Image (cartoon, rainbow, N blue to C red):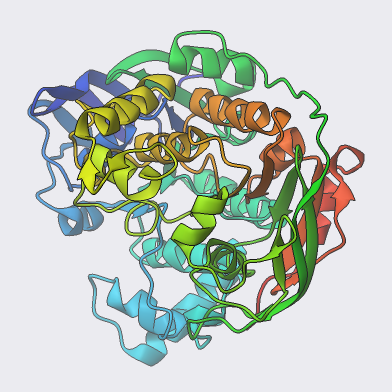
Length: 503
């Protein structure tokens, strides 16, 4: 039901064009005071551009904004914050070596004495159920606690509108419930919240109103509580989304064997791996869950070959590979797709074509007698873009110019298209829309049905339940005994993941 009070924010005919791409096309919407309003759309729909305009990071080409019944056109984020707009980004902006209070102090526009700030953090934590110790070092905190820092930093500036970008992507079920309680409390006190998420059931539970964008335009305003997740997803992409279909593989030979693996983290605030033993068979998906900072990055570095390990701790088809580097492992058929897109999975300053070449030159025969087959490499990149619906002008685009979701689709497509014998993927659908996530999951299932062994590291419990055959929890660098996923519930998995790293 629409509020009779003036909206806290009203956008009228907002448009923004980048070169030949119209990111926002004549967008108009209202955010009611004290409401939690969902902003939804597939990757490239225009959500990021719109919230950047509201937060003062981007200037619109056309249109008008009214905030708190006044004309609103922030020159920069500081002006937006002073006007009463706060934003919690998907990627946290925190220094691991500093304390909670020091991190918050660095992000405030208003001057505080340190002792006064500590007192206010404690009080704010109590008022909103955001348990934080101001004197704790950030590197020792869980993802949920880090997010609380960002929220408290916003709340200390008394925002009338709080923008949340994918706020539950790295949280456990318990932390999600705590966050929802906080957001509901804020809305009851009159704070409006603009909520961006790809988790549609969460949107239905939490949000009062919603707006769906597609191709930069408003497609529909809707009531989340009265619209099913499938209806929302179909509105986002303009077509029906097929459910994933799981097929059994006939091959069940052991392909990867990890034995008593213990590794010290290469970073001061990382997590040491402790006595990990796992077996992965051809034709199966092993799902590994864990809150952020539980050792996922360290485990991936070991499996890629970026971290060397003791003899006979990692066997691939019976061969000791602990001493082999990433390229040597790829040539054997063991591929990996890390979570960090730019700088780890892709070279930001290289084109999509070049990013195909550096990882698939042998697997796809892209180099002959020292000469690069540019035509064949470009065709490989174009095929990935077409198959995985990667939105970009062409394959000559630099990796850094793609949106996060589109780059994720390209990188996953690049690895799956090489038909590996085994693959390790960290966060396969992180930051992608419902349709793309379903496509990636089905592509993984299809690959495994042909005999590939897959390890999927994910913080999306619904994803793990949907595609994995067995599940294990990574907690503080230790692994639990794998269990058949079909016999587990989300609450049981959540309980297995409830302890976070304290290294």
